[in-house]
Length: 329
Image 1 (tube, rainbow, N blue to C red):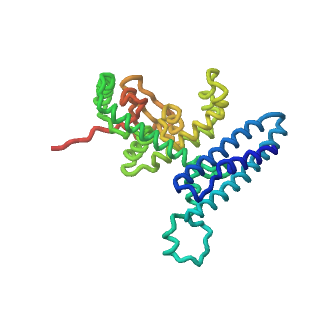
Image 2: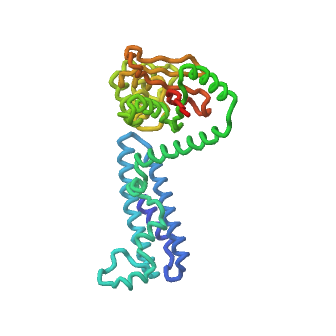
Image 3: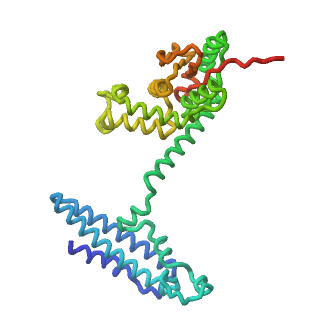
């Protein structure tokens, strides 16, 4: 690795012109070129270090990082000195300099160097500039929900024949029972919002559980009764890169409790037992589904939902089913 320092010195020596003969723009352009050359040198050295046994590679990689760190520090010091010759102030200036005098300078030198260099060639600084995983997840989730909302709006403006037929069949089924649809927002939480609406309707006030709490309850129940749900995640068609059945199951549970992923029969089955409620799901496209028969009681406290296959063309959707309001004259 002895040649790395020599090559690094060349980066600054070969491009180190007489700073007094350069304009500020020319100097900044040269500084960017010097940094780029050092970055290229780092890439070359890392490629060369990726040869030999694992122990040799580890030792070479450590040496490369040390060499690059030294070269980066040396280059920065040189550039700071040259910038100082052009009138830029250093962040370590004497405290005795008056504020009004400091404000007349062209700016903090360290800030300027970072702006010129962009992302530093040192690994530590590169990692520091990256957003955290939690920030990335929040941004991804927000984008997915925004995209979904946009697609839903587009679908709502295109009433299809399948949707009309489905709604007509559902109305024909519900009206004789004195029931009608209570629309639920199609935001990915529709199943849980529909159950929340039913609980509020049955209690005559507010629901004891929010849709988010219902999500958490469903995920918790699925984890506690893993043997009942794990078979749904076992498939020979799934590649090894997607993980084992247990890994996919846990990922699924995390999505249930912390994202806007649509809920379906698995989650509804879990909620049936969590709430100890008899649940009826009416549909205009499929046979009606009854869940939790063991919880059916004589006080007509069953939860009633409607399943819509063609509601928005974006996947399944659930609404709440309520009694038709009495209209008195």
